[in-house]
Length: 207
Image 1 (tube, rainbow, N blue to C red):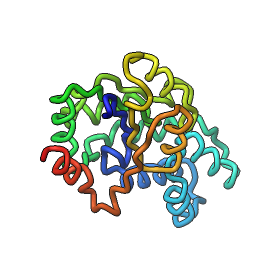
Image 2 (image 1 turned 30 degrees about the horizontal axis):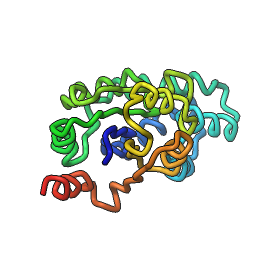
Image 3 (image 1 turned 90 degrees about the horizontal axis):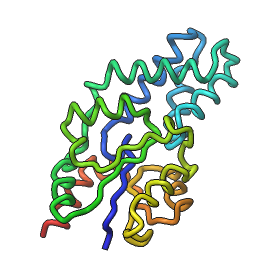
């Protein structure tokens, strides 16, 4: 039985792919007009799971931009904060969180999203109250799949074994992240499931 359930955020709890891709493109466009939109959008799609630092570092090198990766990440975070109202949460998420809390589960988020925008989105949707831990790996300086944040989180609950812990993610990076920490991972393809995975899961768990 799983006692500690840890979630990624983007495209795991939130329906964020299209918005994140648009903000990624707009960030680059704000610094340079000589950006191949089709290439940037396709790269963002194929590189799912990488941190913003890794994504922008690739583009900076490819286009020899006269901006640092750090500057691009900061602008991307600014846009994320100003557009956090546009982020939606997947169907069934809150109901499933309520169900888990009812049965005494420890719930955590461990994400590569920066903490400020993460907190804004969770506050908007009234979800922060369900989580015992909300962790930004980027803010701590150890981005996924580096397991530093996850390992430290596990140490916080010595009474819960790794076998009693699971990580919910949406990418190969998330799978590697969990494996590096020695815990199980469930990779959720929300789009294959038409964004109804948690609603279906709730139906199974609540029977």
